[in-house]
Length: 508
Image (cartoon, rainbow, N blue to C red):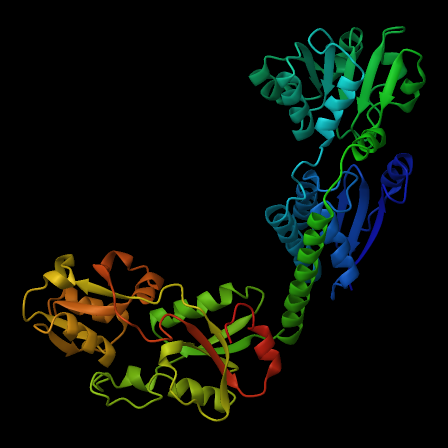
């Protein structure tokens, strides 16, 4: 079972979190994901089922609902980074993989479908607000920023917009500092020269990932007034600096408390986010259930044509977590291509008979069909368990030299296997010769290219699925089969597990 441990800003102080992070010893024999942010240190570990409360907690974290600044965006990137780091260094169990994959999807949905992050004050904006409330002259103050990252870059942008002039950037790696500083014309220093550049600093902002304090009382000029803002976790600036009479020190907790006094997130946006979280918990549990039910490959039968194989792939792109084994069959219609559909000679189960038999004889669990191939009456022991909407229900004309239907010469031969299409063609162009045509889509189109016929009518979605859009001369204004373009899944009656498995996006 997946579990987690968490200490965060809601149940511990900044000092407690720093001490916990220092003493944390990970058991390398147990796969885990360590999430460490300004507000929290969390460890996710274990295998197997994902309890709702574990998923709900991580989903709230990644959505910014558990942040000191509700709705802040940085935590989503931090969750992603923690997951990638763990994935690159360990073999993570399925449960942890799916938990974090779903969490990243939740974070994206919350920020796309709600306004929760709009107007949320960030740490960088809060830093500028604190500086302004101290009534310091930004255009003449010596401002030093320590650290190169997204947070410090945002602060530099804000300062630049405020017309700050004397801004200096310090970092352990000079090249990284130079890349960030160049667009703004900022001077850079090496962090090891801190005594020199801190001597005249009026405003100090530090945000590095150093494990220990990098600025102490000894680094500062005695008696020189200083506003220091420490945005790092663990802290960059020794708390003893704040005891100096000439220094006013804000740490991460102070900044966030300042923000919370000025920000309010609308309750309806939080409720929307919470609704998304509950939906995604249900989706996660459905995924885990499918994995549990079908640890062995699901047996899937379908026709052996290229189009049919593409349709199978299309179905399983909806369900990437389902492992399956494909069993292809040649249908009665595939074997007997001389039978005319145009003249009503075909049996009702012409394209499903062999697939139905595989289901009835327990040789397959499900069959995937073009829905329009289904017989009017299914075998009494079978049922459609899922039906998916078509992305295109139209018919297209494929013709030699891409000649439009209206411009085809009198007597041109047009192939189709549909009595309905024949009727509609003759209503528009009674001077055309309608011929019966059989075979897979590629074979029908090739007959046009070989000059055997002048044109053929083909379902647009079939051409698109096969990547043959270039063959389309024009889309036709015909009424089409109500199941045109749709995909159907059939199975033996009474298997509720299979129904539930494939119910996502099904229209039945």
